[in-house]
Image (cartoon, rainbow, N blue to C red; front, side, top):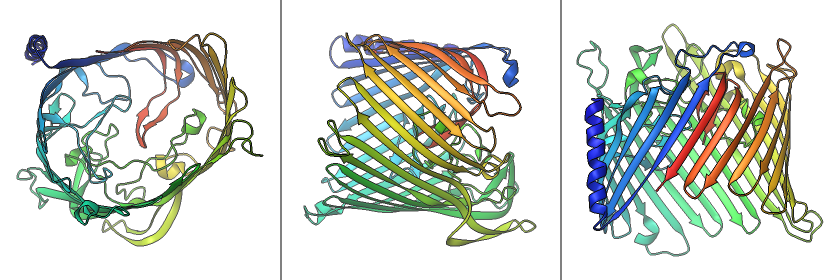
Length: 546
């Protein structure tokens, strides 16, 4: 298999290289991540037998006229980093595609990524940090009718490491620009409908499980002047549950999701509000993948809707969307929302000062559904809008201020509530306050320096933390940094989570080197998370594009 993959990959490169000499455009990139693990007794971390691991990605694309083709080769030697799916091991061709796009027609064969609506009904995407690549291998056809209706139909099997699932996905989506249909310029009005079905052979399961389970979505979007509003509803057909890889088919459950967004913006002011209710909405391309910690086989995109903080201490207690059923933890979903307010105080005003001041306020709160469980019968009932137990709350304010031509600062305060027993299945409820000060100073000859100070105060869980980060930029190309997170309030053992490193950027190349201790916990990107085990070691990364 590996030999065949290498031959196909080399053949592809030779073909497009020859063709590129005559016409068309050739592009691509290479990414490499390497990590060397060390034993670390303070965190009880024992390095794996394969202490040196690498993850490498090489992609190439060729385009001529309306035709585009591409391929991606991946290598996990001997396997992926800790915290990634262990199935990512060895080398081989991971994805490839051929695409024809002209006028209103767009056809793709091979692997592709797609999203319907907000993604609540369907989304496939790739994220290196999270170890997610749930591309679909099959056929996708898109067509636009007179700039009014966009239609997409697709079918295929979802990627799992170097293989694909034995199950098949069928999906269709349409987006309709009603404002263009009725020819109105003062009102933006769009609507959309989606259907996604998973076919899974159940002939050998000796059960009455449905072989086809579908997700349905309907949505509308309105724009009027400075106002926007969007609503989406998703329904999931009845299906079984899987607990610890054991299929429970005695009782089937359906599910749904309600999402409402509203926004207002004008010069210097922006307001966005979101409400969402989830009940048993997460869906996987295979039943046995339900609830896996690697996000493998995820069909729909269900992120945690909270502020994505940039600072390390603010990411110790992060919220993951609660989208599935757990009778053991008595959870079936979530209800809540968030509001963001952005305001800019003008220059030469009392609060704006000489350079102006930017203010950002965010409030998010998420509760479980108010639910009554019958453990013996394995059924439950919920009140639709009544919230249950508090899961998470974040109230934060951020001020960005330029103090002089060379100095600017960021000050942030976060008040946090985190229901660790419900969200992680252990520990105690956490009430925390976090303060951050960030200073950036421009120096002569394109040099700059940055100092970040943080403190987390809580009488709960691991108690108080302090953190510091110092960066020095020699120019736009070279950066060095050193930082430490110190859990000085820990009553068992006070630990330093230190990191030192450097980065180098030149044209289309980037190199980075880091050595330090990694705190165990959730790493989240865009509201989707994966668990990173505590570890210690040396990490290097490199990326080149051409």
